[in-house]
Length: 238
Image 1 (cartoon, rainbow, N blue to C red):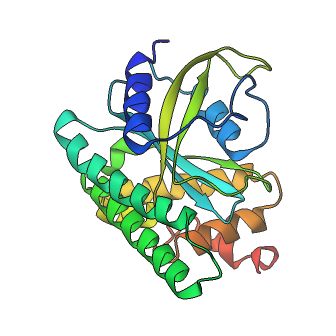
Image 2 (image 1 turned 90 degrees about the horizontal axis):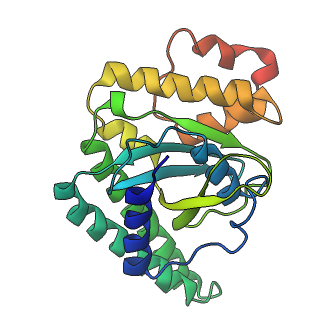
């Protein structure tokens, strides 16, 4: 599997945003931290047709789950994407040097970061049809805080000590905003239902936790008739 185009794009983005590679995200595909779990999950995907402009969208839910999707931006879309990412990184950099004790300034930056992430997510959603967005997820109680933009290693396989064959850029988004902006609402509902079912069936803790994560992350979207009864069952209450 060649991932040269993905790696070239990740390298360009890393230089543009002055990012590093997580030193804990090297040498092993079997740990339980968020970046490594994403690396492992994405390394198992078929990326043989990926090209420059391919990256990972990720949405972290309460530090316990991450939804993700691989997308490819065309050359004419990259300038606008880069503008959004630079605007976000500027706020991230400001937050890093702002004392949380300065509550007014810190809160204002946090709010601005959320707003810019929402703007990025709306932009991304407008670039794709729902059929192009295949949602996956990883669930773990100890994912930890996710970086806004990070560089993930891609492994040859998911075995212990697997060789690193490339890197992929991963950016934090708000899938609610992306879903709202995507084309083709019928296919969109199918994608949303598929993500919900994945979390419900693959949660390493309980279905109740998975449902709570999804429900709190995407409060504005309507469940399909097939999924709605799951939320009505007494054992799913919280």
